[in-house]
Length: 138
Image (tube, rainbow, N blue to C red; front, top):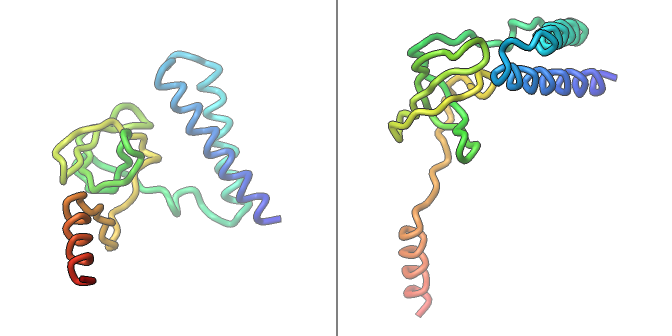
C-alpha cells in the first residue's frame, strides 16, 4: 500500500513538473495555474499521508549557493553555482569546472555531496593503458 502511495506521489510530482514547464511557455494560462495549484495541494496531502512534511526534503536555494545541477546537454549532474532565478521554477547556473552557464529547473538541483564525481577517462589515457597492457604480455 505504501509503495502505491509513493508511486502516486512520484507521478503527481512529475505532473507538477510538466505543468510548471508548460507555464514557463504560457505564463498567463489560468487553467495551467489552477492545475499547478491543485497538483501542489495533492503533493502536499500525499506527503502528509506518507508521514512526511513537504519541507523535510525541500531545499531553499539562494543566489550564490553551490549545488549539483543537471546539464541540459548530457543530463548529468555537475558542481555549479546559482547565478539568478527565472521565476519560481528555474534558475541560471554556472558550471564551475567548465565556466559555462545553463538554465536549469529547480527540481534538477541537488545539494552538494561529499562523494567525488566519476571522472571519465580520456581516450588517449585508455589507449596508453591498453598499449602498456599489451607490451607487458609480450
